[in-house]
Length: 80
Image (cartoon, rainbow, N blue to C red; front, side, top):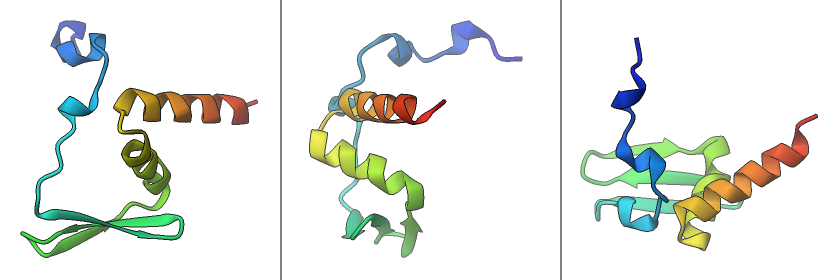
């Protein structure tokens, strides 16, 4: 069973880009509304599909909090 005391301390703090790290061997390629992440160290790529919009917002806003807030507002407006 999940114990609330196991939650990361980070959850109570503001999340900033200082906690987000992208290794040098990871490359992002944008294609219109899609994004692909390439791991050149392992020769693997990942299509982000629906996560593409969030990843692009994260890059543009340079803030994890701002990207999350943007999508919380977006999805709260679209829900009934």
